[in-house]
Amino acid sequence: MSIAEAARLILEGGLVAFPTETVYGLGGDATNERAVAAIFEAKGRPQFNPLISHVLGPDEAKRLVRWNDTADRLAARFWPGPLTLVLPRAKESPVALLATAGLDTVAVRAPAHPLAQALIRAVGRPLAAPSANRSGAVSPTRAEHVVQSLGDRVRMILDGGPCQVGLESTVLDLTTAPPTLLRPGGATREAIEAVIGPIAVSDAIPSGDSARKSPGQLASHYAPQRPVRLNASTVAADEGLLAFGPDVPSGARLTLNLSPAGDLGEAAANLFAMLRALDQPPIGRIAVMPIPPTGLGLAINDRLRRAAADDGTGRQR
Ligand code: AMP
Ligand code: MG
Image (cartoon, rainbow, N blue to C red; front, side):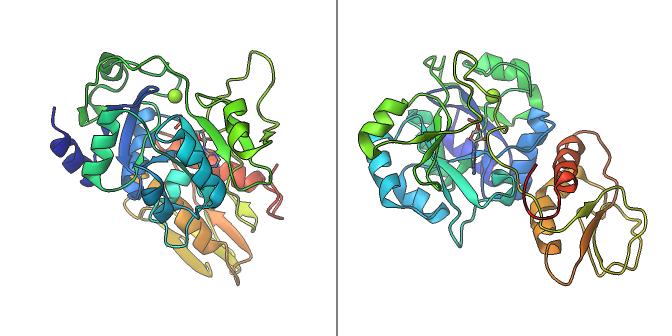
């Protein structure tokens, strides 16, 4: 087991599982769209949910997000530890759009586990790291669990022994006033309020004992302002075309191809940047070619269906 080797794999775009104080994480370079696409592919998750960028502390976080005094006070009290802060994306933030599922906010956390810290330090970049299991399987608390669930989908597993059985990190949105608790976890509401005063609790968190929500449902989704038309085989002159594969209809005002070669990993990596680029004047509507519903195509189609279901006012349903 070598941290230097693990860091080299991550800088190449590979995935390495590593222990945190909560569960084993499936780590990749949070600044590399292809590496983040590979995380979703390895997990087999049929949706893109925003991932947490793991950093060493406030100094690194400040390069990714617009930091503020509240974040400073919370980090002084809870970092390193199980508190994730959602903040506005910094102007020059290097975090991949896929890692934030296209949102204008970035979730940052400094984990306490020494191996996680050593890996982040060696990579010198933030690590995107959801739990290291296939979608729907339980979160892994031992290296063997990662092997069972992900097998050869990870390049390396840093074995830190069993995780202290802990809660997930608390997710706190600092972009609202007052801040909003998006997910309960290891840092309690009371402890947070002792530092920054009263906070709100997201409507999406049910009270009572079903308080654990599946990740992704809590964050609102990115939706283009323009109407989105799916399964397009022809295009109109006022449309922007989000193409896929080699055979592309002509006539669109602007065409951007998710992957001319038909590679779903490349398509996932390009998805949010291209949607944003098409959601501009003078384009009136976004037409999307069919994307095969296999592998990463499931999550790509999920996101596009939600964009198409939106009423075009930017409001989300
Ligand atoms: P996990 O990686 O499994 O610990 O889950 C990450 C959690 O953080 C999920 O509940 C996400 O919805 C939430 N999250 C991550 N980034 C954001 C964001 N930018 N805005 C809101 N919630 C986020
Ligand atoms: Mg999980």
